[in-house]
Image 1 (cartoon, rainbow, N blue to C red):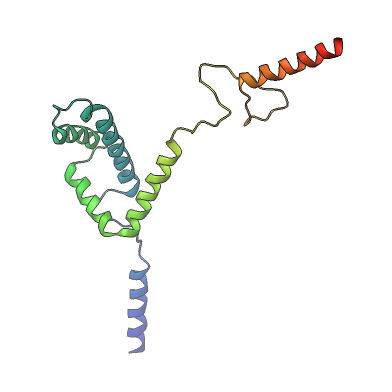
Image 2 (cartoon, helix red, strand yellow):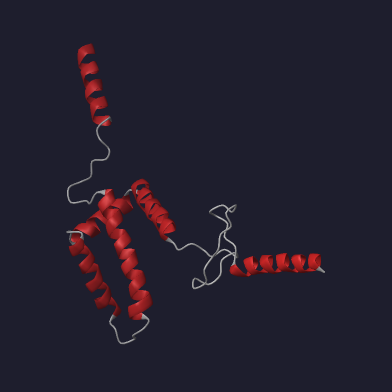
Length: 159
């Protein structure tokens, strides 16, 4: 009896410690799902900004389906497989949270940098003093002001 109990306990522990990353058949791996979702978000943004809002005669659903089908082809998957995977991740909130958090981090890292008040138009060139760090860049107007102040001091000394 005791040996049977120990054997059952070992079998139970072996099953409990099995690989939890095992996904059901037909469910996309998290990395692949992340890439597909990222491309779908980008395609949706493109459609909203440049296709649907620019031309009111465009069929929104058909145009979206066309772009999403291109994404499925690009990632070598199907709509059914994607939807099955999406429902699986939706039913497992901890996995979905990881997936969406990674998308959020990726989105933040690809956002354009906000302009600081020390920057001016891109067309203007920046000058850097030798004692400046890489992070601090002066506007051309600040450099000219500094030179003019220096010239005025020299002119006062000359008088």
